[in-house]
Image 1 (cartoon, rainbow, N blue to C red):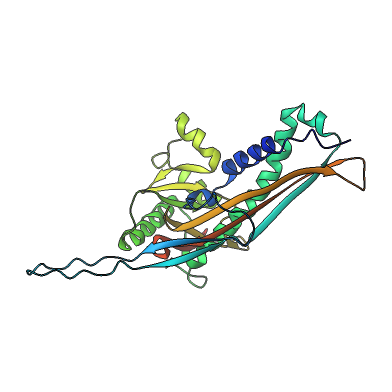
Image 2: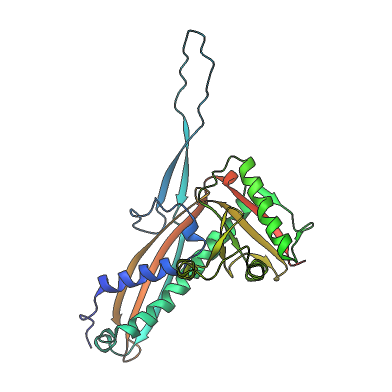
Length: 277
């Protein structure tokens, strides 16, 4: 059959919506730079203003140049999906089938993007613990103390308290949940927010849980905390199209997403190397 019944704009909208619902790490980044990406390899130039100096007034004024540096966010990641459907018109007549297929594609794309952003822990300006001397976390108290230590590190780096986040693995979440005084699970708004992996607010952090927290053989976990100015992320779904499969009596649906991520404020990101203790 011909693929003229395919409606690209509808399918594009479904992909973007589902991506935004399943991302954890990428949603904690500054995403102000999206919108003008047209192809893989695009570069987003980010201007960073240097600090200004306050001087004692003694009757004369010296003005300093307004300087800054340019950081490049390169859109160098490319991922795609492609699947077969027997009849485009029949599938589009059942929106729930379209949603199911697109949710699978969106989850797979977002999972790869999440891993890319999670790997930025290597560029954190502050590190607590190391592979040879990890922080032992085996109790709820030690988990809470770890949050306090990371918060102190951020405050010492003059990182604003507003917008602070931390992404923890499931076992860390379990320790926090074991004490009802730390996290309340009964409110409807918190339950709705947990669709995005949001656990609650503890020790000044919005706590998120993710299975993409980098780890070494499920032993040493790189737990990152920071402020939403620490990382920049941009993505774009460039193509979503349907075409006839020349090798079978099926139509193909496929899409391409490009994206890039970068640490732009290293001092606003802290990484703790931790194990279960």
